[in-house]
Amino acid sequence: MRTARWVPFFYVGPAVLLMAAACLYPVLTAFQLAGYEWSMGTPWESAQWVGWDNFRLAFGNERVWSSLWTTLLFAAVCVSAEMALGIALALALEHKVRGMAFFRTLFILPMMIAPIAVGLVWRYMFDAQFGPINAALVMVGLEPKTWLADPTLAFAAIVIADIWQWTPFVFIMMIAALANVDSSVIEASRIDGAGWWQMTFRVKLPMIMHVIAITLMMRLIDAFRVLEVVYVLTFGGPGDSTEILSLHIYKTAFVGQQLGVASAISVLLLVVVALLSWGALRLSNPMKDER
Amino acid sequence: MSMKRPLPLVIGHYTMLIVLAVLCVLPILIIFATSLRQQVQIFAEPLNFIFMPTLENYRAVLEEDNLNRYLWNSLFVGIVSTVITLVLGCMAAYGLARFRFPGRQAVAYTTLLLRTVPLAVMAIPVFMIWNQWQLVNSLWGLVLLYVAVNLPFTIWLLYGFVLQVPVELEEAAAIDGCGPIRIFTKVLLPLMAPGLAAASIFTFRIAWNEFILALVLTDRQTRTLPVAASLFITDLGVDWGKVMAIASLIAIPPLIFTFVAARQIISGLTAGAVKG
Image (cartoon, rainbow over all chains, first blue to last red; front, side, top):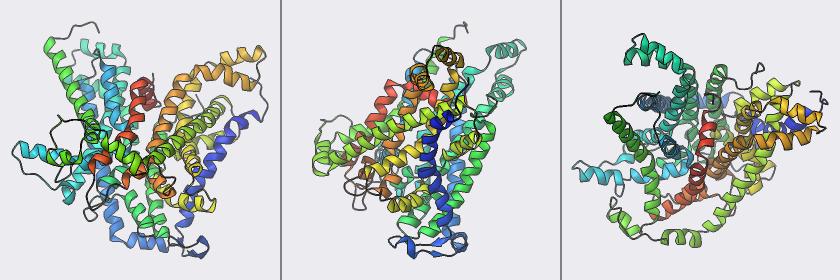
């Protein structure tokens, strides 16, 4: 089709300008702010250029390291549990049955509602005095626990909330991938005498490996972005036992009022997520030229 | 497969599905159930689900706690951001899918990378820039931000849908004398309806649910519902009935969308990774 040269820019221009101004520009500004000492409430003109000092402060701070560790542990535990559960359930339930559409609808409910609502309901569930979980424990004759006041249990609580919200996503991705596997391949391997074990680990899983990899990357990226659920569920406590990096950034900036240092830490988080995203794009770039 | 499955296997299959469904739905039911109970009951018997429902908590939050206003703020921000994102995103997806032009590759890559920026990273610079642009404490400031952060995903999602529309249809329309704008609105848009439905639900969901940027950018007048909800959590104890009433109000629109358009949502979730 012959079109005037300005036509593509007419379509793409408005969106690109808006993203550049209100998304890319703020992200680049984060890098700039990381070089300044600037406290909240003071005008920007009073900010002082300090070079790499904020990074030095950030990397010299034990709480940044413990927060990074908490984030890595959170991401590793949540994502591996969600992947394992999601894949196992999909393999067990891949057979097409009546009513699956209805069940799928119920399964996506947890990821559709607001993270803030997810945080609130789990905070209520884990409430030491009035929470349903403790009430259930007492009913079956077990000791109630002070979930959100104990470092290990509080960490378990944020992990449980994330697993509850996101395992269905992995499950639905895997069900869709398995449904796409060419049934003649399955049939052929069945005729060749493949048992359940071989069928699963030699045929099915290798054939959906690409989708597994993409799902894994998407979950990892999201696990590093988690903030709101933890904000309401524990606010990082008790102590700093659940203070994941994004919450640490928020607190440093808006509670501790050190915007420069917080920006330096956010550059660190941004680099981690950008590397993961780059990896995900290499696996599957939906806008490649060849298409 | 035509093979009939043995009955125990079928029963086992449905039992598992039901158990999983209960696990997914129970916490959401608890939100609604708790919002319909009196505070005294909530404290006295957490596990008793047979009770006289009351709308008292809703009345209390809507009338006494200024929530009426926050509800409208949320609706305004959610709907306006969705409309603008959809119009701009649709145009951009079309431009990227149908034309080759200098800088296309850079735009595509940047868009895809922006999709995953953590909102915690955005919070500080946005707080500063929106102050300079005098967009703090204004609903339009939130709209601008939500349009910008939603565009990458919307463009990416709609791009796939544009590709599914055969170019031949557009060429035929061009031969019939349609200009580029008419081809876009009369040929392409109707065929992309499912994609537009999915994109609008995802955008509305983010704008409606978003908390951390709204917390940083709003005040008593311009707060959205999630921010209002978070302020009910205090060290002095939590009025769970009221909190769950707000959580219910926040949860209702996405739940409605899910039941109405589950198929489109799932196709949006799996887009890019799984064909079909």
